[in-house]
Length: 122
Image (cartoon, rainbow, N blue to C red; front, side, top):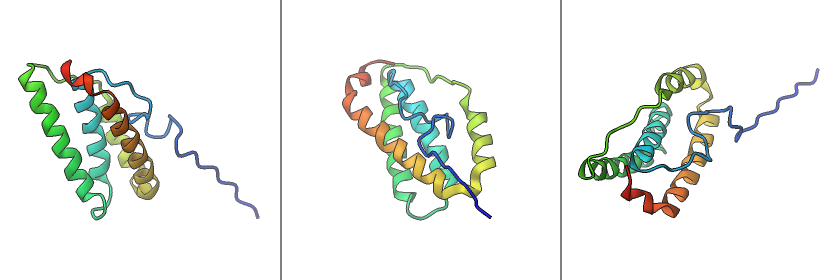
């Protein structure tokens, strides 16, 4: 008996709420994206990601403070419920989920560093 299993870890269909190529469109976009990453990190088993969760939370806090100083409003895209449903349905695959989320978070933070000019816009 042969079992064929093909896992595509960087497919846009896997965890579509955290696309690796999502454009950065100002502070509200950054805060929203980091909030989604926080939800995924929070869903993973405690341990190795706890420091990362804390660091992302600190960064998110700084960005929210910047939003308040510029009088920006938070925007909601409606991905919260689909993300929560996805995490509930796929929570048993936390190793794969963690790998994908951490890879996309790294790419997003690298893009964030290259787009620091977006800190000036809501």
